[in-house]
Image 1 (cartoon, each protein chain N blue to C red):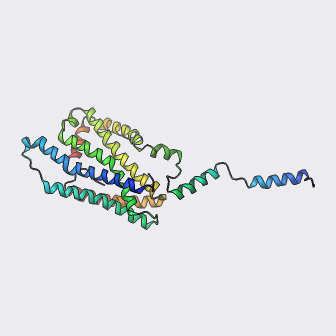
Image 2: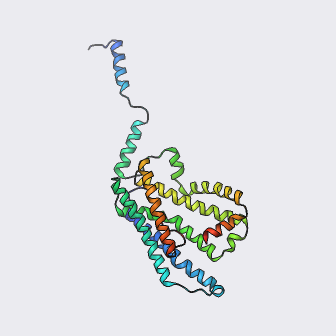
Image 3: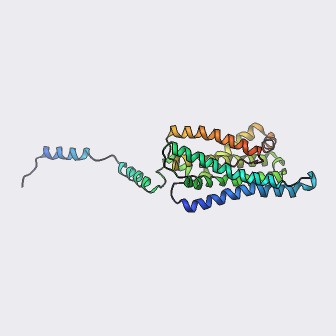
Length: 87
Length: 179
């Protein structure tokens, strides 16, 4: 049996290491392929997860500050504005 | 929100759209009539209610047709039934909007009682609007799988179509837009 010398072994290790994909790439590819094959929901980015997983919660978080701003600007006229819009 | 499981969702979508349309064009006007007939001498416009009901359903189908044509234009391979089943689910905020509008129409004192009650009502209306907008973007992002360029084009086209449908609807007696 022929014994490989250290240099050759290092070379071989370097060549195989170079082919290892970056961490998480396989998982991302797998998710993408399975999602497109099964028509499932695509993988979400963290921001999309926060916004779209519970749209009602997101809507609540947006509406409260928006209504506060309107209330601060219009004060008692907010009711009149609403009545005007509703007809 | 995804492309799969069309059959179960189609029935749910039709149920949501029909209940919203019936509530908006039938139940709310009838309740308003019985709440105010002694004060204003109102009469029930059955023909107008039927027209409003038909237009409500037609505007849903028109919006679905627009999304389906846009998906065809961008080669997204989406069927009309898929679009109708998914877009119909976005009528949940519309349903609650009609409930709130009907409540304010029948009991207007809720809105004008205090500025805090106006704030609460305003917050609920904004919440429903944002909820609907999120459904719209979920349709484009997860079902049509659009790029940013396609999303901008579709939004521009749908803004024009929605504005047109809202104007037509308001002329035919629909107070809460049924899009």
